[in-house]
Image 1 (tube, helix red, strand yellow):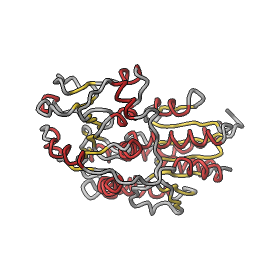
Image 2 (cartoon, one colour; image 1 turned 60 degrees about the vertical axis):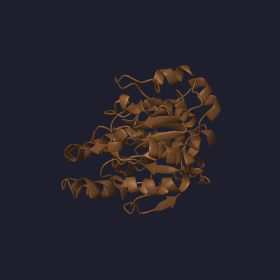
Image 3 (spheres, helix red, strand yellow; image 1 turned 90 degrees about the vertical axis):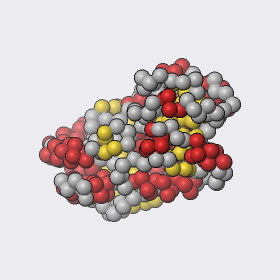
Length: 365
């Protein structure tokens, strides 16, 4: 690939949202100008990028940042996160030199970061513009969490210095404190669209007339939730990934292979559902907005993006809170009844991918 015009994306492996929105933007760039070659560096799911970009993609399955270490779907392991950040930062000088050399080798003319600090330091070292795209930054997250785990202050400062190397940030809605980036340009929501309608997705899944409730927690299910607690909610049909728990008649266990056999993805599963029960994250919130699917949400630990996402989500979707305890206990009927009775508001602008695709080539060397 030496000498080719290449767009390289460094993507956080924390959660689906970073991968989904970056893949959506990369596909939009290629749709505007197919001559761009695309490379992706991430510990996130390769399939998301292959589905969006096909086989003509250079993919390096490597961690580009630490993100957060989780204890299950809803709890952050602060001590482990701090230890991982310290180890990653010790290796940063060598990583930067290695990535800068690789960027030269692949003919990189532009780096897109969502939102690993490494992306911007490596791009600057290679003499390539580094463009960020995000609604939050790790310096903001780590500084907040450092009130409980002081070693994370060092990680916050290191991330802020790296973000200072960015050429510009494409600032998404649901934004937190992004002041570490010297230049910021707001863009609309970046989201993906389902390939089939809700009736067609429901037909392929063989869903009946009862309201369909999707349990979505980073995959399709929530470890620790025993399906038996949902058996009393017989007027609803629940959808979840396999968890090893015995499923009562009103719980439909659906694997990724099951979806693929029906020509569907996780996005079409959101489209098929009347309600998604989830922890708020950019990916699932924007999928729900695109699919016009209502949301019942639960808290996700001391994560500063959570209240920002909740405030923004409730502007564009019917959204009702349920506590972790009520969720795990299966006490969902009041929240489900309330959210199904709420009207859908008008949607926001949702052309962020097209706007990003137009803006990115303008930054290329």
